[in-house]
Amino acid sequence: MYRSLLATTLMAAAIPVAAAALPNQPVVALDLSRYVGQWHEIGHLPMFFQRKCVDRITATYTANADGTLGVRNACRVKDGSMDASEGVARKVEGKPAALQVRFAPAWLSWLPMVWADYWVVDLDADYQWAVVGGPSRKYLWILSRSPSMRRAQFDEIVERARRRGYPVDNLVMAAPLD
Image (tube, rainbow, N blue to C red; front, side, top):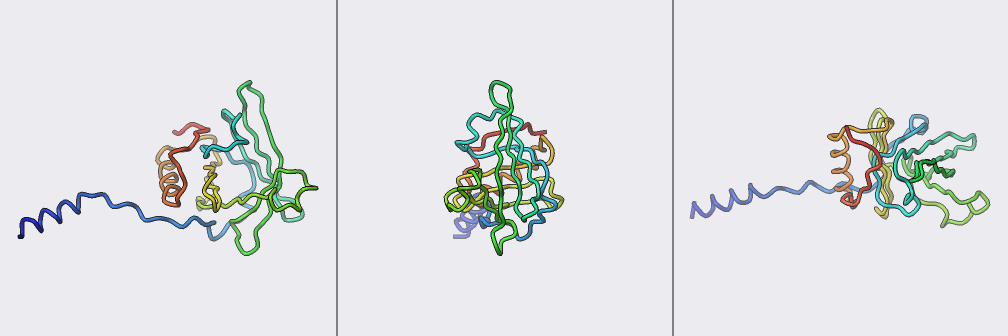
């Protein structure tokens, strides 16, 4: 009896314990004055509007006088030229790290469907990297202030995104890992 109890205990100890799930929600605090500026995309889940991007993907945020953020997404495409799109992000009341973005013309901004959720779900304390997702988990961007990222840091970020339920096995790499 002791042998079977010992064998069962040893087998149970050998089974890896899955990491606990993390909630998929915006971080508690986001200082937009520290968040503005240029970010380099390290990786993303496939998105239709990024299908032509091959590398040098950036997102640049600027503070607007009305409290919104100007958004400029740019990337290099296959022919070597740069492609860019301009948009606007607005705050979601009561959720400092939840924004809504639109790239449709301003005259369509009254339509709810032109606004997409933009949640900062993981953020470096020094604002050197950020992870952007949303409630659907259909999109995810890993951003860095520098054009590359340490592999160990990237792996840790990806693991936390996995624990939030994002399909990280589908990530498209946009920049090198050191």
